[in-house]
Image (cartoon, rainbow, N blue to C red; front, side):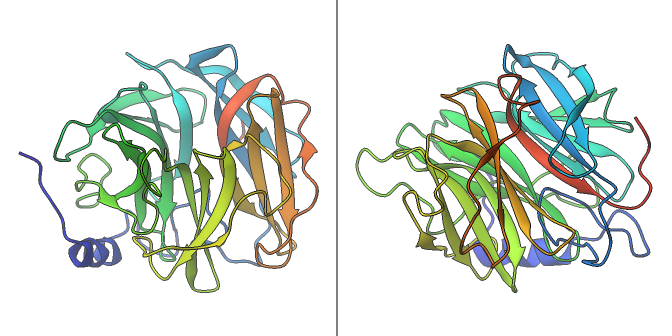
Amino acid sequence: MAITVGRRSALILLAGLPLLATGTARAQAVLPGVGVDPHRVPSRYTMTAFRADSDTTLVVYESVDGTRFTPVAEHAYTPPTGLVRDPSVLLHTDGWYYLTYTMAADATSIGMARSRDRISWTAMAPVPMQVPGRLEGAWAPEWYADAAGRVGIIVSLTWGHGFTPHLLVPRGTGLSAWTPPMPLLGLSPGGPGSLGYIDTELVRLGGRVWAFVKNEDTKLVELAVADDPLGPYEFVAEGDWAGWGGPQEGQSVVVLPDGGHRIYLDAYTQGRYLYSDSYDGFRTWSAPAELSGLSGVVRHGTVLTEFGSPTTS
């Protein structure tokens, strides 16, 4: 029987989670400004993705400026079973890199792995989705971290009638036991026949939580905002509001040293990987530019901003 957690209890649990390390260290996820001193300059950007020619192979790239990426490991990890699609990477306070990913189109669990150096990865136990009913898919998990560095995972679930993003929160200080998924209010399928929202990326800015979501009906990346990670969310930008066109997916947002934000986009039907920048709180974005070294090579990556003196590759 599935365990349930109330919305209020989930927020209390998220707010009360202890950090894995003492001092000023915080988890670093693919979220701009989360647990990060804005005056610190990134030392590198790490991208994890799956290979365009193999969705069972993880590839790791890095960049010093967030624009020119070079490979760290082109065959970094193959899971024991299933796929390694839609990988999302986190550098946690215990010094380990953690990966979560889609295991299969009809998976009822999400995959997990960890690494000290981003090159050699060790599989962890999959995280089952403890939900009622017959689940038909758990897709595109993305790490989430709050302002204090406490972490969770956003994953889109379907029972065969469209996708809804859900939040999982770890129980205790490790990343091996998790709460049941809790839906993000306001991001459910819009009506009969709607495919809902996937690839949800949560970004904290101005004391609010901004959700970059792929609308599965239009295949466009849209923007919603809420006061806390579980919502309720209100859409503030829909359709092709930013001029990115479509179809787009795998959106990943990082903060730039000069105070702006950069979004990475997988233009998957064109075999192109793109980026676009904003300097006005997500209102306007630059024309998308191509990342030539990634186009046609990788799919659906997430980018991790790293600070300080990381281990060299």
